[in-house]
Image (cartoon, rainbow, N blue to C red; front, top):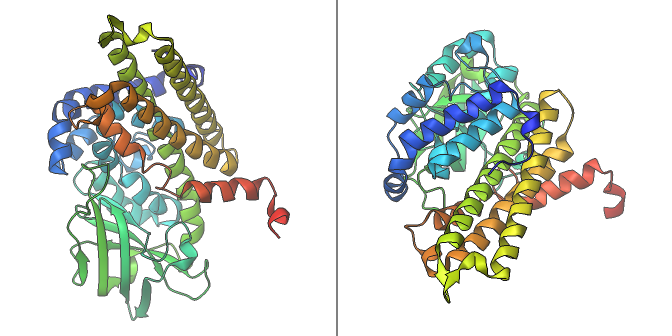
Length: 387
């Protein structure tokens, strides 16, 4: 089904989407059920994805990347999701949120030392920000790094870290000062460091093939040369990071909803009840019409915002809107798809069942729906109304 918004794409965007889709249909789709049930996928998949250029989307060519911006990343997600596993797609993309601080505030030597190996699929990287008492409110970060000569000594705990059990490098947000925002710093900590304790993969409702970990730092010594940027520079880099993460999550939402819609349409044409296909009933046709309207609206808005970001426009408000619109679309459309499938939609053998579980994280991850609304309200200058 041809969706709106294609006019915003050039040949390179389409090529990335098609490359990602071919990779997904060849490498992911035949194994998706097995990997989901196992809660993991082969590490070698990163190398295969790297060979196609997919891991390098959004990174400079001089560092082994493929270049591109927000729209390229959205197209990559849209293509990879055709493999039918949000977990695998997320797992392949953890570096997309772990490496940007290196690009934004890291030194040239650090960029060349760490980024190319990840983009070649030789090493894995994860972002370690969330803590038991600090999620979207990063000012509440308590993991502390104390300077000791030419090292930092890190003590604290991180939670819900995507890719944390497999990553070789952890881009870790630590507190080096008391200022709520100005006291935050990034350290790139090897997972193999003495004192780093990584849990077994946490058991989640969805995204099964993507590992998620709790990580403890017990007097971990980290060389100062692994500090990314100056002390206190992490907050602004992280805020910039959030924008790309959130537009990516919007892309996940759109792709989830679009695939669920297609599955529902296919099933409704094939499934017969009372002597006719489900599409022979007005209630079914209207339900699918509503689903299609939701998908189209979310996709056009997401692509439009991504295109604006690529033009260098300040769109914090719209990014937050896109994430909420797309997340809501994913939750609503997958719900309706499961309803149309009936009892079969509740069985783990169906794609819509998996998508419905996976969709539930989208209003939470990368900043909750409520946090997005606060950002939107702030950008609308509604602060006076809350006083």
